Length: 374
Image (cartoon, rainbow, N blue to C red; front, side, top):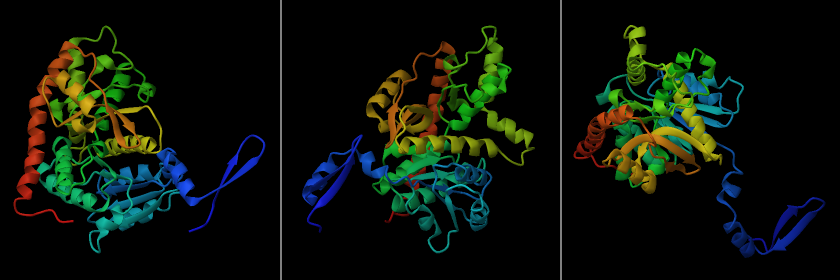
């Protein structure tokens, strides 16, 4: 160990050298903000699990285009080396590696991950997706337990609890770092409101909180809180139609694709948008607020206030979340909502409770015949 440590500091006119002992240096650094050491390392590794699929490929493309991402790990059961090779030719900072299941491919993809996004699965096949998500969650729990985990795989209302239960089995559950991506509902609401205003250029500025969950009646757009209010002449029937369109926007896409596909491109965009917010918060940006489906225990105080508003306790709920460098910094309340919106919230609760129980019970039943192993 060196006998002395030299610290250089600069004021407006000169450089000052301070010679101290290693012990004193350690003492000084212990009082510096954590960002002093961690943020000096600007490397961010993002991982996409299910990277060769209809959502995974465009999502990986958008993450590769994000200048804040310096490493991109891709995993899927087929084609990931080819997807990685294709993306690697794009002139952005991220180094791209693609992995398949053989030779511990999942472990290699996840090693050193800061953020993991999971779009893996089969569209509208909840039973199949539950097993896929459980297996991927096991990989994350054993290889990258400190990563921020963003779940896109449907049904999000159940797959997020599945991930949480797997993490609990391995003793790695941190509710602040687990997110259900509900951003597509927000993107749709913003776009549809901009259409009503007759100006799609407004869509990036329109902010409509969407709470509850991420399927059907559990999707509750709080249009009364829109940054761009609906016209005063907007009829109730038109409002009901708008709410229904936001709730079942996925069906609109499936029908337009003649049943041959689902909302893959818009979901990839929404996933990349939310991932970008997480990365910005990870790097120290303050004041980022976005809806996400999270455990109410991520912020016990905010979760308790939210539960009081709802009139009952739920393990997971989507509301406006303030993001921080450790994940969920604050769960915001619903705030002032209309009577019609209150009806929608109450209609969402029974379905949400059932969806959450489905996810929890799936993991419980799975581990009756197999035990988690580190």
